[in-house]
Image (tube, rainbow over all chains, first blue to last red; front, side):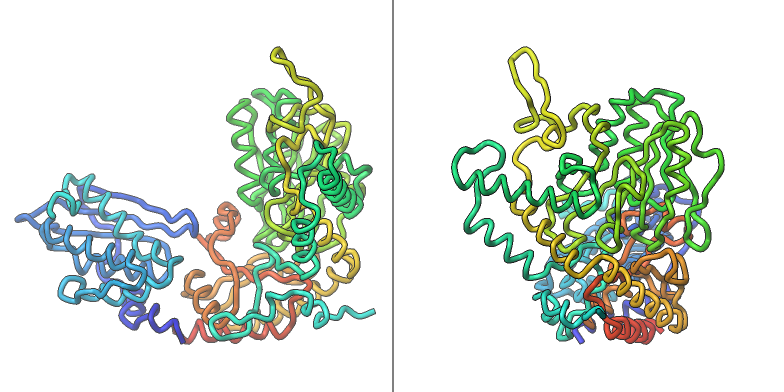
Length: 153
Length: 407
């Protein structure tokens, strides 16, 4: 069935057993994003840099398996990274999601994130996968941490 | 005569297609209905043979188009029991019809702080936001009826009172399927001199609706949910009220005379139909009305009652499925929202789609209704005259599969 590309085991695992879920203190920047078409929502908190790294990323939300698993993968991939590394991974994930299924993901960069390659073929679900990543970007900016790829590229 | 659903289905070309390798099971008619070949053909014929602009041409094509457009108005008027075709205003959709009343009636009544508008917690956003905006513009206060755990309107004494100027509630809920007995609301509103609007987007397509029997002052409904095309909606209003109301949109066709110093307006319905209207769409809607009349709205409603009873029973037998809204077919229509334990509606909808079963998922443009039941989203299956019990069985099998994937 064509759904195999969408509901990868990795995605279902992250959905059923999310990593790092729950909002934690202290934090320096917070963003709440909603998907107005479906009502899904997520709050992401970013803690300030310690030794040049994102010391914590915490999140909580309501949503489908794709959006919630994506938040769990984001936590795994970006926590403890430098802003430059985080920007590179962020850029790669967004490119994968917006690639209409034509982008070959790099497992060294995206780790479990490669499981989302199939989501890019379902235009209605791309927004779900990107919801936590967009909230993260805003939360980081509010924490005074620049993870925009334009600067680091 | 028994209702022959097989014969009905043969009229709908789309129902013979496949989706993702499975026969299409279309359970999203509350969102938009499918169109019979008769409607599709009539619109094509209009564009091929009779296309001209309406109400302004002396030539043959313009005259034919005008006559087709006005014939459609007559059919729609008769369909809902309007006193005259002049009580039927063609709009873009139900949303525009409600916005029209919120603007023009709001201005006519000169709403002010202290005045109240009453709606309910089971409204579509299109019957909430126009009234919120009207309250912002005028300082009036918005109040609303709640919803019971069973998904019925919670009638609260005193909510409609001497301060109430407009009451606007849904006739049949697009989420819960509840058909509201509006007689008490209409009676009370009128006793305080308030006017009543009903959002009939979900009722006019599915059950006999007679505006005289309803007793309301305005109703809104839309073509594409009743076998017609998108792009055309209907406002019915009592003629004396329409005649007293100022225009909503301004432009061509809605005027009596225009000078650079000022303008006088045409009588209804032209006053509220500025610009070129949806002409081929009106023709399509007229044929949709013919189609519904031929089958009979009582027979259609009875078929949907049977399907709804079957679906309520079938879905309540699926472990982990929670139905929102009335649990029995009495006082409800064929729109059935539910949740599947531990699975988000998006995921439910995606897996059903892979099996060719098309349902709607999300907040259904009724976030307050979802919030009332403590969920951000629901899965909704909605039925129509072409729905079969086999399709309900396909839905139930699909839900078993959903639980397998997420088990």
